[in-house]
Amino acid sequence: MKKAVVLIAQDYQDLEVWYPILRLREAGWKVVPVGTDSQEKYKGKNGYPITVDCTVEEVKPDDFDAVIVPGGWAPDYIRRNKAALELVAQMNSKKKIVAAICHAGWVLVSAGILKGRKCTSFSAIKDDMVNAGANWQDEEVIVDGNLITSRTPDDLPAFCKAILAASH
Image (cartoon, rainbow, N blue to C red):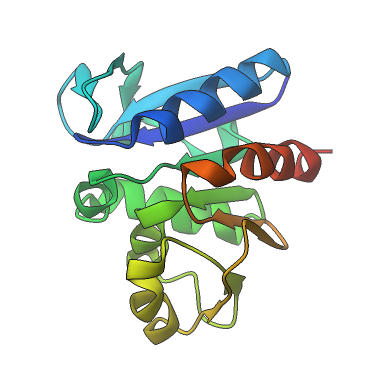
């Protein structure tokens, strides 16, 4: 069984958390929502709640096949969490799936994994990603090896298809 961790912080983009969780579970994955602080419950930007299974400090990269970073305002909090950045960087170095959508590109910037990589994001953070060394492109989904990125909730179908395709 494939396993994914979804990083959760306050004010996550509701669809960018729940769509991948439900889609991957439908495909037979075990999906673990992981908090980036001591809270047990978080609310999305639109108020939809989620209860996390554990904190990011309790997660080991070897136990998972993928890490998914949602957008919203959550990435601004996630990127301040050292353990979350280490998890993303370690998953990347182990060539495991690192999937980020919308503003989640900020987490990739802070984890230091974008230099020379092809990616996309919400257009407002393009400059941040380019300044981190990324080759940014405006496409619904970009797969660069183990790195999968998308722009907005409208791209979620392509984003999840790419995650599932990369896991085979």
